Length: 142
Image 1 (cartoon, rainbow, N blue to C red):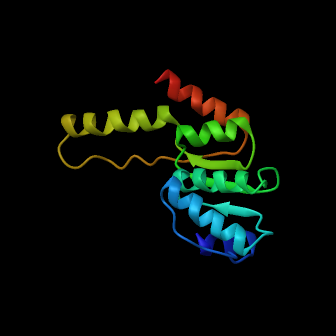
Image 2 (tube, rainbow, N blue to C red):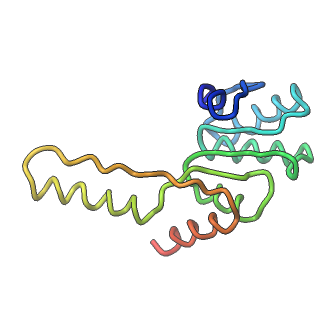
């Protein structure tokens, strides 16, 4: 992720840490905000860590001037994006596309000899309340 930030944004991360749970994300984000009061962005490797970071950002009174992003398309993350605030984006898979892959791969195994084909899935960027609500509706309809 550091390499991508440098390549795409031309910046090195000011602070790094590992947090794959909400509790760890909360603790790491609290420490980051104390160490770097002007920190503007927190990007997590998953939505659980990002959700913890959002709690820290909100507790610090920074929900309106921070960008928190994650990856997974977790329903709780989608709800946070839908309501507005610090959680601005997540990378997710469309549920229908994922369901088709889950169904088609075993069907291919049963109908053909040899290993199944690779079924690539393209993630979508969910970066607005309306996009989050659209993806949440897919979860509810599944």
